[in-house]
Amino acid sequence: MNNNETTTKNEMAPPKSSIGVPGWLKQNLFSNWWNTLLTIIFTVITIYVVKGTFTWVFFTAEWSVVSENFKLLMVGQYPDEELWRVWTALSIFTALVGISWGVWKGTMGHVSIFLGVVMAITMVVPFIAVGSRIWLAANIGLLVLGFAIGKQSEKLKKPVLVGWFLLVPIGMFFIEGFGLLNEVSTNFWGGFLLTCLIAIISIIASFPIGILLALGRRSNLPIIKWFSIIYIELIRGIPLITVLFVAQLMLPLFLGDTIELDKVLRAMIGFTLFNAAYLAENVRGGLQSLPRGQYEAAQALGLNKAKMMTFVIMPQALKAVIPAMVGQFISIFKDTVLVSIVGLIDLLGMAKKIIANPQFLGTQMESFVFVAFVFFMICYLMSYVSRRLERSLGVGER
Image (cartoon, rainbow, N blue to C red; front, side, top):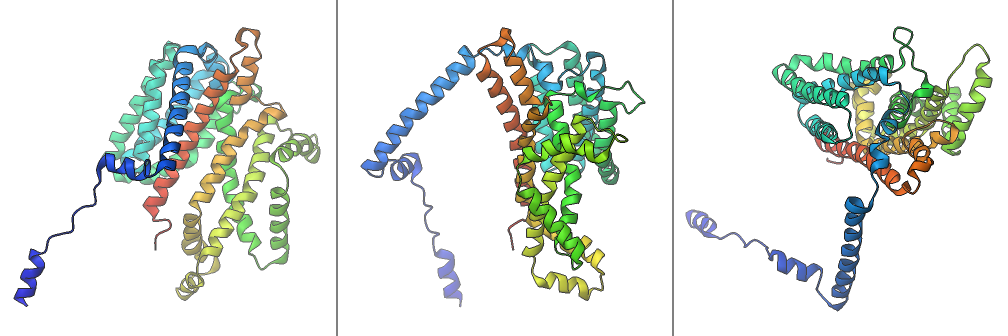
């Protein structure tokens, strides 16, 4: 026994498989004449594209179209004297992000760093107004202060969750006014502000509707089941732009003269109804992925159907379909550009109006690259948060 133990201890571990950078290049890129030829061709193409892109971005492009119209691209024609309301809504959001960072750490820390870096870069850009720089500096301070406050007390978890639930109505109150502040008509909303509002409201409102439709499609009551099936299949069978036109043109006819809805609210309703149908199918897929044993275990604990679905089944189903749901959220965020067809001026619509100005003719590429960059940053952040959330919840692990 002792001899075996001595032999085991004296055994050397196998050498690490390390071929180094030259070996890796030879093995993967220059292993034969065909791979060598492809490597050379794609290297030449890559150098050509990167060099041309670098030259255009830093030397050729006329970025004045962005600098001179930055306010229009961000908030549209929102009155200058009322911009403090948009900044206040953003400050509340920043404070909640900072406190959440201190309380939960992890993913919220990455979101906070991203938000702080974006604000810091924007603050030092030469064409940003002094007032905007002060607001940006204050928001960075709120981010740090919120982190310090959240780090000191874990009792803030419930108040912070309540704050996140109230963020949208409070933000809408500051932006619109609701009779308590000077009313700012939705006709003045535009640019990135309108894009975010439509996407956020649609995602939040469609989420519970999608869950109810998914449960309704699995219901034993024929009326509820067939209503859910018809609604889901009907919405999924027509393009989003058709839903938007129906919301803009037909919805006022259905409601009559007693209820008046402006264009922005009608667009939000259209996006919500469309997104709910797709979310319902995502959630239904999550429900079907759960083994029968989960239902039987919940019933063995004496839970009724409502408690079983709320505390046992639905959390697991939603966790299983996080990638699909976030993919749908990203799709809805990008699809907000379609509102320009029904008369609203979102970020892309504002860029189109700017380049139609004779002063900025020939700057289409610069405008569209800026719009694409903004969309990419937001969509990548959503995707990154999704991956972090999947990892923390153990999605796909057994």
